[in-house]
Image 1 (cartoon, rainbow, N blue to C red):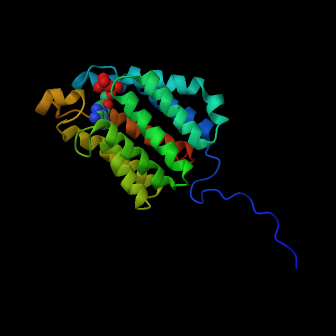
Image 2: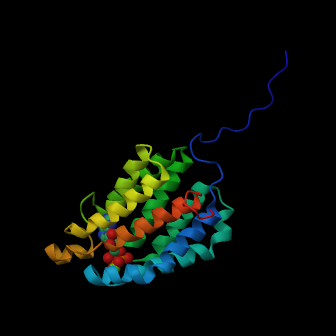
Image 3: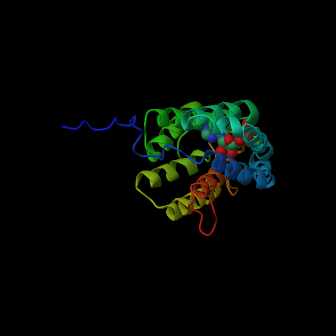
Length: 216
Ligand code: ADP
Ligand code: MG
């Protein structure tokens, strides 16, 4: 009887073992850098006008570390990118996006699938910011996208979900973050963090090769 050849080490069955990290970094950076002014404008309306510059500083730093990040296993790269965001973005969004990526990295290491990875990141954001859906924050995009992913939505549906969720923050009254200081006057403006989360969602989908008509 012939013995089977040595089996390869088992890999998480759900996400590709080699995420296109370089492309992910480039797309995320381009999305944020290309919309920094718009994000800042949104933050001028209901915050202190720094969200675009904060996020651009963070993603510039991630892009500068692209080679190092690409050489890491994806779970470690997510963790390291998260620490870069905590250090460089600052404000409220830095620790929150940092928590998102670190939570995602930890779940990826445990072998979670894409929905599980995003879910774990969202749980960290909720815990860090003591917020949930409906507070007019980045969570109002991340949560619906996570739910759509869990429900098996295709990339087009995920895009539409992110964009609709971003736009839906316009009618919300902020109860967390700087915009909550405005109370009801926060209504009528899209939340800057929801806008950046939407941009990042679309960038990730682009990077994974699902952009209609766009090469990955
Ligand atoms: P800061 O408010 O410190 O100036 P930014 O302008 O960079 O920081 O980020 C503001 C964004 O952070 C908001 O638009 C909102 O989406 C998000 N945010 C603020 N507080 C929270 C929170 N507690 N939970 C989740 N997201 C939050
Ligand atoms: Mg701000």
